Amino acid sequence: MTKRNRFDLSGQLALVTGASRGIGAALALGLAEADADIILAARSIGDLESVATTIRALGRKAHVEPLNVADVDDISALFARLTAAGLTPNLLINNAGTEQVSPSLEVTEPLWDKIVGTNLKGAFFVARAFAAHLAGQPGAIVNLCSLSSEVGIPTAVPYTSSKSGIAGMTRALAAEWAALGIRVNGLGPGYFATEMTAGFYEDPAWSAAMLAKLPMRRFGELDDLIGATIFLCAPASAYVTGQVLYVDGGYLASI
Image (cartoon, rainbow, N blue to C red; front, side, top):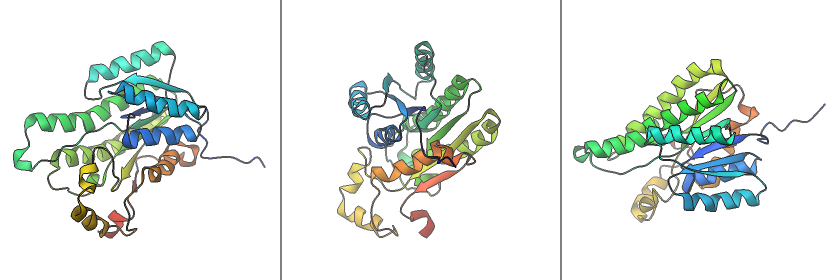
């Protein structure tokens, strides 16, 4: 009997948005370690080149592309460039996002548009362009969700709205695109320190309060997200779609 590695991503090409730092960079490197080639997309080309260098050192191909997911024309331009280059990603890590805390009574329309436009609208139009680009070939999408996809977060109403929307979008696209051979799932990180959230973790009182809510009594490390992401992209999850996999140290199970 031939042994199979159901987590092998060799021969796969993954597009990772928001890949210049934090979760996006970590997931891009993790997929490369599983033998996928990577298209790195973000607004910061300089930071992307640094990630690309590390991926190439692993023996994988890395392509760097500028992308502002809040601009639908920019998304279209990215996929036009991929077509011209003969690149067809069959995996999408829909990670690009932004956050800015604000009391709800102080949320302005520009702030709402910035957060929801980047996190939810951007994710949808990237997914739509990806599916169209596949042109009937099978693929897999992993949308970045959040604990706020499930619970309310004070002073983060635009962000919570966007991440709840991504969870709903994940289920709706999974139901619609299964017939196209495209699986759509979500990854829901718990409490992970990144450049975007570092300020919270520098507050000892906040950190102590959050740790007390986590059954595993530790914050997540970026490496904790890689195995779940590989699973959702790999043949191991061939019959999994429309699900959100939370990597949260037991937080949601305990509240």
